[in-house]
Image 1: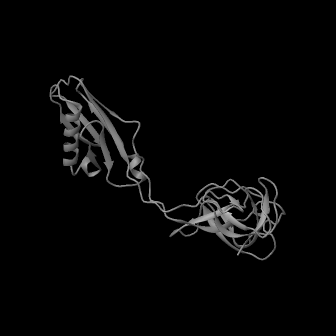
Image 2: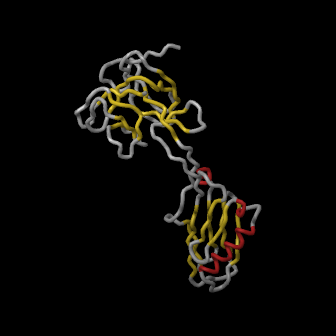
Image 3: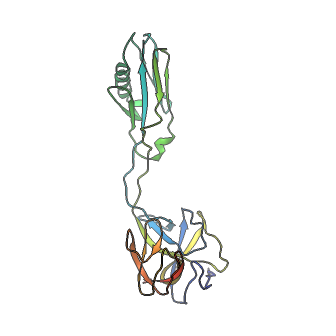
Length: 253
């Protein structure tokens, strides 16, 4: 399939000359630009494109804290924690302290190995009760946690601070090339395939002034400049730009 590339001088992502090599990437992050922005990939992913580079990181386990207060516990009442529909209950003792309630809940949850205890590990010797999800990743953020107390002297509530959101592991990224503008200057968005210049000369927006012959650098956020600060070299500038935020031609070797 022939691709109608744009050669408009001074337009972001326009090719400079007829000698280039191109690839394609299906954008998973939204560039909201006609072109000229760095396109990054992820190790092990075929054909995907991102507007920001990434460093490898491990998955993060979700942590949900539960605040417990006990003042004049009536006793013989139920306090429950339900994780993903799996309920664990304890029975209060008259006048017991919050630390006792937390301790009983920790024991009960961790003993429930086919229920809530299969989803979280409970810990804490005093308020708050800490629930750490056993499977790290963002999916744990969708698992509901419900707490309840039938004892008027014991209050349990999901903490709104001090929790940890589950996060998926991130695969290390790499630079693919520069997004190519088409002849219509269509704005590129996530969910669409983008042509990528991997070798050749192309117009790019730059931060700060640049001079022909200077090394071109990109940052993890996709900013292009002649500054090596937080940057990675990927080519050299072919034209000058004296504007604070101008445009210049860069050559990808």
